[in-house]
Image 1 (cartoon, rainbow, N blue to C red):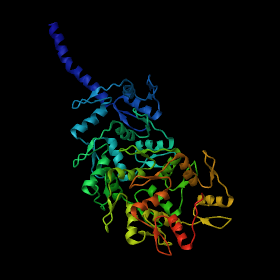
Image 2: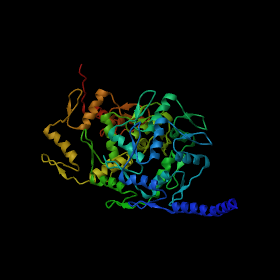
Image 3: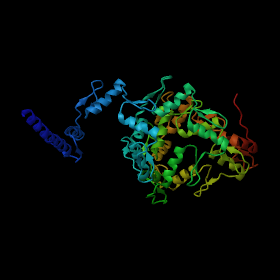
Length: 512
């Protein structure tokens, strides 16, 4: 009887106990912990405590290997895997391991093709949330990462980090074969192809192999007769899809910023500010070594390499290095023999547009780009534009000795050296002094043997740009200097002067 009573009580009490436990769980689940600073909610008290460290800046968890601190114990545990090399999260498809579960989840989308993050503007999808965020900057034009040295802005933190190395000179990526250092990991990877002769990009027409994709793309032009990537906006050609995509985004982006002088429009305010320098003649980027000023920060960066000797652009075919990327592009035409610019009169082809422009002078009798200011001739539109901006810019700086006027104060300072005889730029090798920093830079090439101006047709290099210009006339056949007595033409002004002695009866004697 007593046993039955006990069992009865036990049986009857069991449902009440279950209800009691469920109620505790329910109450626990319904308990929400709110952050009194930002209002974010958490289901656990510990999660709220960890979250608050973000606001207080407190990092109570320290790595006993490197001393780095973290606000959450989980972040510390993840960090420690850098030191131990532990990668506990394994991909069951390809076997690759990861130190964080989030990296494994993202990696698996390569196999599944899943792209769960969608752009609400253009509909493009991405496998990572961070990549979507970066993509949206194309539409907004937002550049939230600012360089605290020169003020230039960037859309990605990584690009800003790379940019800062142009100021610091830092080169953290080292070649383990020859010890050469690089500021970007991509440049190191390209460089390594020189040592291992790896050429993974193969032409399916002639089976020729290349170490880089863009070299293959340029090579394909030989077979097709044109660049493989054609813009459907206005027919402009590109030899890489990334360049085409960037071009399209610039063309389709809203151009909200208008120049009140010439009416030209820009998609970004910074581009408008830079453009206005062509009207004002302003050059806000001075070189802290020689004092020369530039209208664009990128031109200053390139200029500084004259002083530092840095040549960060390397030819992946022969290994030759250049201080400016456009010089590398011109150089590569020597290897691929690509001549996309064709004369429509005689069908002769050229590797560069300005070489074609110079060649056309043979048929037309004059340079194709004529200044409407005072008739001066140019063989490139960029040279004509630069000339016009100099002529139209207001000349506010006057020489108090001879009265000559200048549009920039730096030019006036340089000019005054003629009157004072001042030569503030001494050569630290031989002691010779110069009135202009540019003349010193040219002089130094006598000591260093540097010849920074290569001919894109035959590869010969020159220490002076003028000598290169004169040399190119050997290839183009251009003879712009004419004798006003007999009409004979010459490729160099010095040859014309020598020739004129025939008419005036003078002969230069060579001293014994």
